[in-house]
Image (cartoon, rainbow, N blue to C red; front, side, top):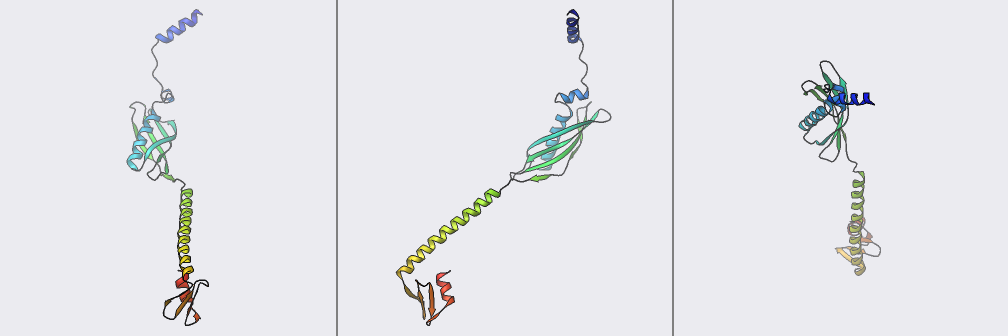
Length: 182
């Protein structure tokens, strides 16, 4: 038990070793945070429509001369309600804490699905059109009931019950469609 106590006291009093690069980024600091921040700024500079830039995945690979390469994927919301996805790369220097070689890949868009809204608008237009057409026909029928037979022009006679017009005693397709089916 005494040896454990001495080891605990020695561990507390001993100077802490400098954090190795792998420990620094495992604790949430370092290359991932720095590159995520810089990539977010780069995306917003390049694409003014970018709102809410998010890094969705990232990986770190150590390179030469105290550097690490961070690569990954991200996304942002655009003005039209859709999402745009991108890939990125960034080099991080462990000694200076600075980033370089920022690389933002091509965007791929994922638009919102407006199919239900469009279908609702079309269906609504059909219903409104049917209601308007029905009300016009009702008024037309009321007029026809009052005027069984009438003459819209010289030599033309229209019969409401038959929904037909006659010119000089003969059926007239022109006048029938003009009066009853406009």
